[in-house]
Image (tube, rainbow, N blue to C red; front, side):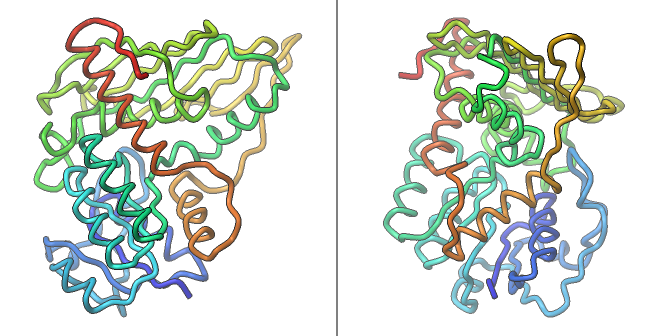
Length: 339
């Protein structure tokens, strides 16, 4: 039985709690949060998508307000770091130094230097470190990766990704709307698609971005072209400056030589392939969502089982590198190299 801990009982902490609870071989042993009021009221937590509204059953789980105390008292096999981004580096390194396999939510950290410290700590500890880039595991996105890699429909000619949200006013102490703590929508939200672009096509040669600064004081809406040597057109748009009635949308349209693949979370069907001669195909995808699948992947790896190479610390560092290049491009209105 894997003994799991969670630090940070906000939206993502609750999502991790629910995922672990659904696993037969995992027991949630301890939870830490400096705001002890969260242990008494665990319902009504908001996020971009549903899943964290219902109350949690914390019976039999050791609750802590001090992280060092939890590390000293508990013998954990895994820890989920579901804290605000500016706290990722410090707490991930402490967890790894304590000999715990660590799953840290995305983005990896605020800076490349912090990301490298985390990767180095994982290597030194010989423990697993996985960053929560859930889109790599999201069923429709995972299927697209499989289809493109197969070459069944030829080469990609263009790909467009969108991730748009109302302004997130629900975070603890409003940390999401403080650029020094979240990095704005570019680092917190848009990174999902920048990371997925890297996953599909590798690191771009250059990026060219334009952005609008919003309520965080940083770039809260970004449109980026990812430049590759083979001429395909790849763009992604993301941000959280939409008004409250907008809600949340994520979508993509990918043009291949022999098919068009599209996904839109607001449409029915959400996912389809338009092939030659007007044929419409609804691909079968894995059950569940990206959160449950990525954590199942992590637990399998902790148990020593063979898992596909979907994400590693260097990939996650590179995704932060891409976002920082996009921000620089927004600042300068010039292309920025990623070499």
